[in-house]
Image (cartoon, rainbow, N blue to C red; front, side, top):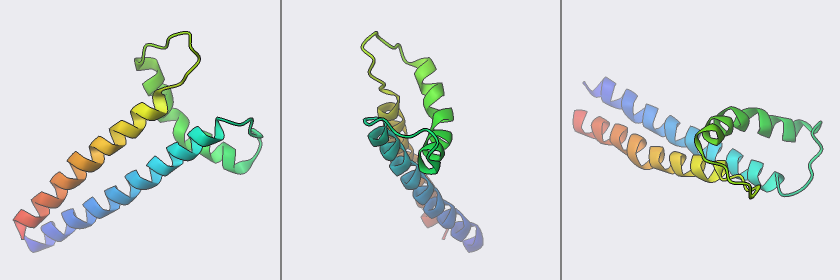
Length: 99
């Protein structure tokens, strides 16, 4: 059983890092949106390509008023924090109990 516990522990660590990296990518995308970035810049293209599928789904679910403000990065940020606090901690707790 300790092998499965170690596997779950490693999965929790990897998931933690993936969620943290994606959270910082969302933050970078939000900061870049404040200026007029060059759409042909490889960094800007990477940020848009990695975040747009998630942000687009959230935008479809949110009622968008005519204010022009995009709240989808905030919602995705909250979802990432929830997954970090619930899912990663749950996987870690299961791994500890299996040891």
